[in-house]
Image (cartoon, rainbow over all chains, first blue to last red; front, side):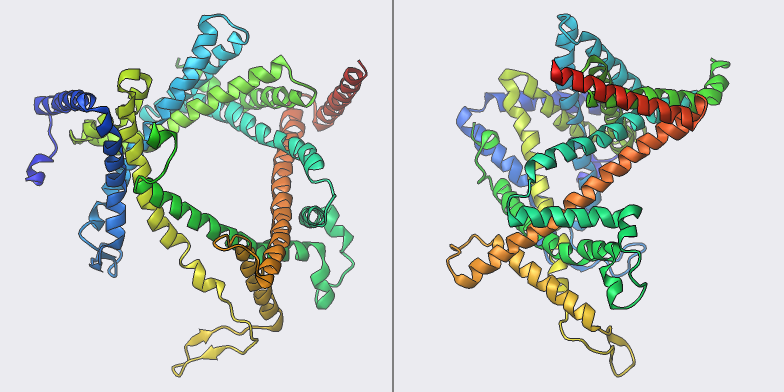
Length: 272
Length: 257
């Protein structure tokens, strides 16, 4: 039945199907709106549960051999073939959220522009930059001619790349000033943090490496070269801590995911 | 338009460099103090980034996965995905704003479902690999001559011991299921805290160097790329020194006032 229903349409039948979808959506909204308030929260929880059900069942359902082109030993179950369409659908639904942020920014800057408040020129610049970049990004793909490509490259290389890397380069100054205030060497732990940070930084620059250049290239004392100590810190000693912290984060993430999926989570989204 | 296209292609590099220089210096002006020029370039960055993000979402996600199947391939049911996505926007209409939570809830639920798979795929393989051999040995082969275990030197065994000690100590720091009254657990958690400070120091150092690398890249751009357009690197370098001097002088004068 489903295979008969879900087949591509063209021409007028396509338009009728689309109109039908919108009409159904209108009816659905009307039905949802007529629901009593007491039923709304359980409905949200059911939809949340259904959203996660597919991936949970797909993972826990017993698997059998399911060879696919390029992977003859591939395992799966009856839900596995739908993973790719489900991922596509989710990314499209998540993709629409971009409009929420855009509308929010447009509301703030639009108000400032319409009421001629302070900084209206900046808001105008925001609108022009956003529209120009978006238009050229779309045009570059839809009509990839030389002018569209070059105009896009002008905005990308001339503005976006320069502004982006400068903004992040600015963080270096703020990091220095913030770390001076925050990590003042008052305790043993803060001292350890600063010493290790210094060793890592010295090990990365030529000037720091010059400090221990007289140590031999081989043998026991070679291990005391600052770049070797830095490598050891980053690849051996700190990787264990990072892994332990990652385990903690993973378990916490799993617990939160379970609470959200089962509707046990409390807060603004689930309660009000 | 036909004349503009080759002109643009010819001057693209120069224009990019001049625009990039204005943007770089405009944003760096914050190092003196909050000013209108910085605000201007900050908003320009916000607009450009937003446009770039929107363009990316359209070209990488919505167009190939939704628009082309719906419009070109005739997959009419993709309209349902649009409608479900449009439910988000009901949040702007007070009367029906609760319906937006259906879309948000669905995405939250799906993310939770994916989190189970993510946990098992990402973390489970790390558990057995965390148990490392601690005794030095030669390479071990089975009867058919196949390598079973690589040789382990003394320094590698010491590194493995350090790795496992740190792992256990840091994990014990996060062990909140029981009160940490036990002496061993207490000491282990204390050591874990020291080891985390060690790691945070390493992360801080790496982050700092990454930011400084970006700063060097911008200065390199100003001195070498832009400098070659205004009479040489030496001119630009002198100009930057002059700018730095002016910023320090002005900042000191402001402090005195």
